[in-house]
Length: 113
Length: 113
Image 1 (cartoon, rainbow over the protein chains, first blue to last red):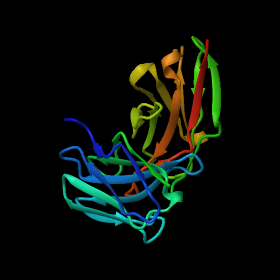
Image 2: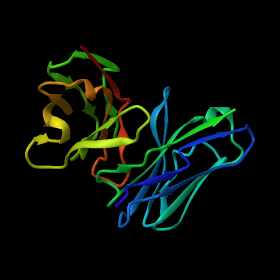
Image 3: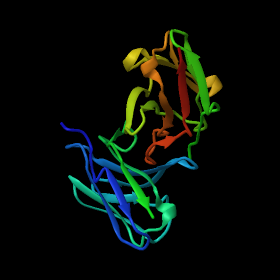
Image 4: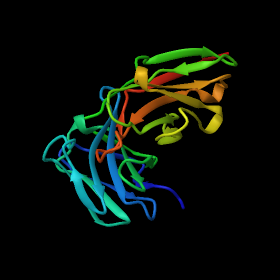
């Protein structure tokens, strides 16, 4: 298996634009997580899915953020409109079940100017 | 909800010296504990995990960790570090529940010649 695949690896966008981050989890994994990493706040869990269903989105910073998982092999994290304070590295991770080890993608480095 | 504390933000160790990185967890029941390593520009890689059983667990790259319930600790150790071990190290806890992984703030390991 190729592991968790995220795209794009880098994204630079202007404030106010819509940004969509994509993730393909490891085949057979039932749980998918979106994390955000910044120097100030470290790794924050934004949302996670179990069997394609969002379970906990309490970490999503505000309504500008939304995430979907239309099927077991694909998830998106969308920011609309984007703001400079959204600049961070966004990681997607998947795991066989929600409380076992998570396997991380390489991350998407987002810069909002 | 569980929380994880890594008291050391930075640690500097000479190459060839031993290493111990500290981690304390807060969840009272059976914790599921993990150590991850992150090299610059990369995602997180699992070093080792503890669910139950032997409290001394072995991981990849020569790392080990010991679970001590009485101290609520899960410290990571390596007998002799190599320059390639320079990275950010994260301790995480899933609490054995359905909340996903909670990460500590990380410890930045610097290796000096």
